[in-house]
Image 1 (spheres, one colour):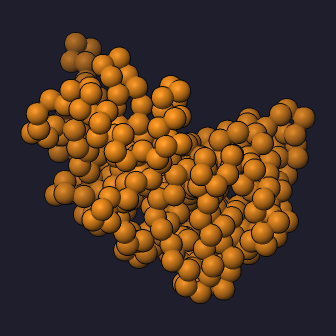
Image 2 (image 1 turned 180 degrees about the vertical axis):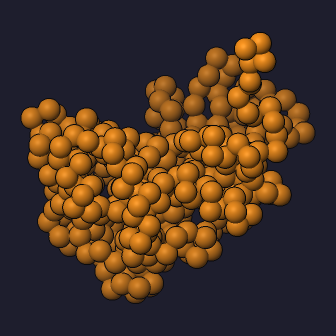
Length: 336
């Protein structure tokens, strides 16, 4: 199967028998990866084919044998402009310390947005950038900045170890592929508080869920400390979805953007994160927007398919009038 612009499509090819598939996969595994796979582990790695195509690969076992997922990674690192991302993202890269979180569910383009942010830093700042990835995706050549890319499993045991080591490697910017556990999060907090810009990702949808998850991920006795960290050192939360273009031939990122302000810091401190969306709606002059505002703007600019946008909207009633496929709309009960 191929996934094109979000949709799965079968490709015409003969059925691959288990042994045939295993032979193909074995060809591209290093001895260390093969050993881990034989031991029964799923494996993640990046693979560069002979013609230079680069892929992010996951190999796993399932009830019918082995399976593999390949994600194509373009050789060119896209710029923020090419991706059509809001100008405010460049501004977030200009911070010299603190934390910026890029969030969204799997496959929403977080890695691509972060790669574009690193590319912007690489071109505009004379900085030491340490990127901790699982696995390495886009490859950055050092320009104005020095970009050091380290891979989980190949160069480091865990993200937390990677951050701990990077603090001794004189970084200006640290990218953490995923803030996946309490240890990684607290190491990332230390880095952000000690004069480094930390870019990280979480699999959360929306600013409120991101902040709640961040606080809940740490032990209860750190709760107050974490809330004060967020108010002082979290610069922004960017959440993204990929929405189909009107012709269905591509997808465009729509972003919810929260920039930390005193008012938002106070809401976090007093456990009123549910009031954050109201701050996003009124913070346009600071570059803030809710997902619904981003979707509406893109629909009006005819950049996205309104039917696909409807699926991602929070307040669907506002988007109903743009929908062309009526099967998406809630059914009205005619009996009453």
